[in-house]
Amino acid sequence: MLLALLVPLRARTQTDVRIGIQASGTVKSPLLLASFRSSGGASGVAREVHDVARRDFDFSGVFAVADVEPLDSKLEPNPSAAGAVRVEGIVEGEGDGYQFTGEVFDLATAESMFKRTYPFRRAEAREIAHRFVDDVLEALTGERGICETKVAFIRSTGKVKEIWVMDYDGMNPYQLTHDRSLALSPTWAPWGTELAFTTYKRGNPDLYLFDLKRGASYPFSTRPGPNFAPAYSPDGKWVACALYRDGNSEIYLISRDAQTAKRLTRNSRIDSGPSFNPTGSQIVFSSDRSGSPQIYVMDAEGVSQRLLTLEGKYNDSPRWSPKGDRIAYAARHDGIFDVVVMDANGQRPFQVTSGAGHNENPQWSADGRKIYFSSTRQGRRQIFVMNADGSDVVQLTRGDECFNPAAGPRPRRPGVSRSG
Amino acid sequence: MRRSPWTLIFLLAAALLMLAVAQGCSSRRKSAPPAEVTPPPSTSENTNPDTEEPPPPATRPSDDESQANLRDAYFDYDDASLREDAKAALEGNARYMEGRSSARVVIEGHCDERGSVEYNLALGEKRARAAKEYLTTYGITSSRITTISYGKERPFDPGHSEEAWAKNRRAHFVAK
Image (tube, rainbow over all chains, first blue to last red; front, side, top):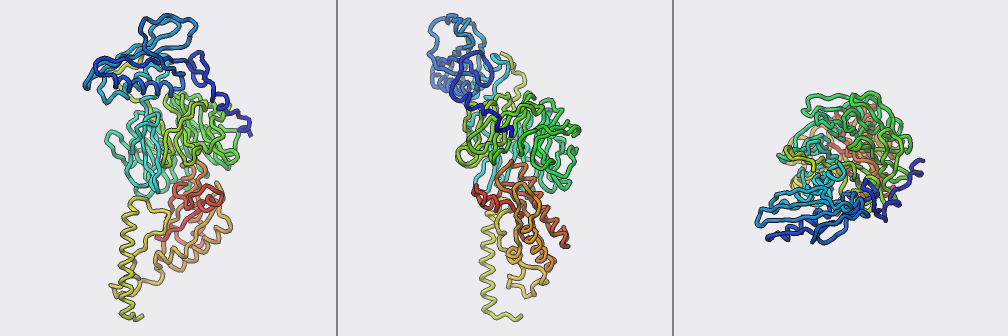
């Protein structure tokens, strides 16, 4: 009922990119991106760093990128260009040792807002461009970008479903598991080098943990019946999941060392799909205790369970946003699934996909600016990403069917300053 | 029963063929969990001509025979309750198993493609268990029945129509 009233944002944001004050979502800040200069034999590397950075700035959803030539004289203040920035860069070096220096100017004042030098090896050109753009985003908006994050997902080939991992923008996909079985529902540990997932490799749908550093997976919960829908607590000490050990699907917390299991839900219906709020004090989940799947919330001890979604007959797959203010989920209306974002208290549900196939599996990016999801809008299920308001939809996978995207956390780099 | 030499030769040839097929299947089946298809032909005792032993008690049917006699139960969308046609199929399965005390089955719970992977995993299990429970009301001991849910991951019909979905919402019986 309400879904019919939800105004699809797409119509509002699809066409025009407004020039104005830096903000998230629909209003984008102009960014003049100079082609990067180079010295020595670094012109090819400079072009690569530039091209990756250009894609990153564009992908961020924060900037409207325009290409310009490098400055040949001192930048003059231009008060009428308030809110716009200019990015200059130079790559120096040769052989395998390079350094990139990037600088961002406020066009209105002509002052430098950010400048940093990054030493790197040839093979790290892409990585260094990602880090630069994330640093710029952090310096300019206070919220670091996600260029360095990865997305895990399931790729289906014939009867086999394996976990794959790709860069945040769909580049460099590679196959992680080689079990030739069914892998489902991957989710990242907060420290970014481990995934929990369901696998049938020993017959029963069990929960395993994949250690990306060692390239191997280990059994985590292998109770008879489905062990599924894993989600780590923000401190990484617990994995919330659904188990079928009580005659029906209930949500449990299992300690990361697999020694302790705490049951959180108690009813005869299907409770599934847990997702923590960023402080770990609450868990949003889906339950069909009222007859069809709806979104509920409880505290992390399992008490104070209450219904959040008041509209729609079928709401599932809730995911709490990284800032804690919103919850994304998949809603079925008139037989079609679409991604809806609501306030964390269940108010103001807002449909962010529309008019194109089934759109499900919403997953927030680490900065909360993006939502990854699966969609049948091009036929076979594939993974897409959009700004959290539904604008700038980009298809990330092609070919074999792909689903269950899981956006990873930012890499932890101890000792590296995170401020500009 | 006294077997003629020709029968023995025929049975031997048939058994060898089945062995070859079974091996081909088992190497292929390593690549995927046991699931949707008819299990590979077994080389069970009563097809093995090398032993002169009589077939085991008549209550032990071959998997193929069991498979041919077991019917699947179908469900409505987002529902694990047993329809009348499902109950009829399950009753038939119960009667069949009743007369063959060593017959064991795996009940696979399946769903159509609509809805999340996770919800359907739970729904598939619910369907499989509903079928199992119904069999036990006919006196089939629960130790003879195991359940597994494949959720929406192993559709019988890959189509996206109501017709395909109806086929995919099932408790599928596999003789074990």
